Image (tube, rainbow, N blue to C red; front, side, top):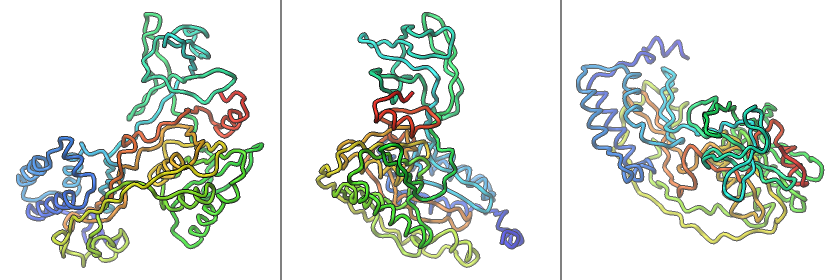
Length: 422
């Protein structure tokens, strides 16, 4: 297939000025009428008229422009937008742009306790200058509550960053000390690709769910089994729900799981969604477009889009019947509908605690629809629903207790039993 498109010149798309400006107008119209977060972004100070005016001025200087250069111009002009679900891609020259970066946690190997005066004492350290018991005065942005026990409330020294870092320099005892950092160790290294699995560790039930997306009947049946499994856990002494690596999918699976466990759960979010998209556009997928790339032109590409919105009100939330510990284990790849899963658990379960590392932060928008720019053959993944700002995009849910350990399940079980989890 790639060789066929190469012969047709699809991989070397050259736009004349008229085509480039036409695609630009289509993009602006779609963002204004179909993108659910656009109003909020404009309210925060983004000037879309100025942005697209500048783009038109740049493009108008050229008689022609390569589609890849056109792609780079538009994504660079829209860098103020922070939304993981908003994605522009062009498969013909392997360009993908996601409009957000994840802020990841980087930990040291230094654990501290907090004093009554608000300062910190070193509890355990691998740095010679920081002996156990050393008093520190550290900004709270570098301190993260750890899952710990034995009567000690421990914190880990670290830093969140959207770019990779390997150390921080802090002034301690009136002198700068460089502290090595590493990525959080909580990531799942088991390479388990099953949609879900369950097992016991001592008296506690561990349920691992790697995704809520199904592409086959078999996948659908597996997730239905997972949702049904909630009934079998109603009398569990404690449940560990492992959502590491879960990138989301169908959030109604989460609703059914919690309802089966807890007797109460509803998809109870206040949100706003676009309810009138032309089927020609809303049904367009990568495959249907690629199979008819030479036939699809500019037909009704944007003239019939109607920005009619529906607001779903938030209902009453009540706690259900499951009262034993329900521990959620997350990592940086826990995203989208998996984050809805967490929010629902927090809403409906009486004793729900988040552990691990912060989630991806990919939940403020959703309900993706696919559009395209017909001249540059650029695909637009446009979120058409908007949720209340549950957390900051790119940061996600902050754990109640952070874990920096290659075996977080054992840490959680030890904590539930009252032992040490460090």
